[in-house]
Image (cartoon, rainbow, N blue to C red):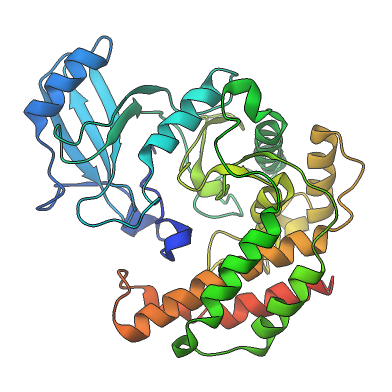
Length: 371
């Protein structure tokens, strides 16, 4: 697999793609009308802006429903990856490829594993939209959270590699790498809960759910005291990571479209939510026999993160997990509403929307600290 695994659509737009859809989301295809690149114009731009580039080039599009179309560029000097804004009318603030390029460029300065950014172009006249060009990283992507391709004895090392890298991310001070203004600090949970509660309440067509109604009321009352600020990835999962071809080592973190300044424990809990996540929704370990698979337990995983980030414990762990299940439930509820109205962009939208009550129930169980 390569660094430009096509990323699942922006969660905030309600277009998550299951990590189990490898066959549908892998490989290359000829770009369709509207998505074709002006290869001559792009080649001229790369000649002027990318050190060592030699044309001509040929562009193929990665498959899948990514919100920022992604291309493989074959040139005389090697292979590159291009990510661009999609054509057409766009929601304000979405598809911010400039932010993706910025955060990866900044993180690479301190040795965090990301693909190298070769150049960003704000001039829409080159290919019709903003874009950036980055390194293609060769390695392994795991679509199944049980890591079935890895031997039983090696499996813990792969899990600890994930834990250590997200801890590394949260330990980087945004100001120290020029990202002090990368997001809005403070009141993270209040703002997020308000946003997703409104989306749920303002879309009655998709139905109501007693668990969701309970969460809308209970979660704001349970927000932990204190504020923490860190660079957060927003979608840190095993299928958004490239591992070394032979070693339990992450060589690139993908899909920075949801990254911002936020609360590190919200980001870590979203990642560790894999322990309770049914695999038919996204890559998860729900129902898996962790002991038989030799996968660290949730408690062991949390301890590892705490040691790496200098924490004693995470006292309000159940809130952080419940918050993330609630957020994902609200997203799926929005998908269900769009599917009913015939405006959902994915053919899988109806099936995605059906997971909304299941996610709301999982959020309630987490909030009540139930196994």
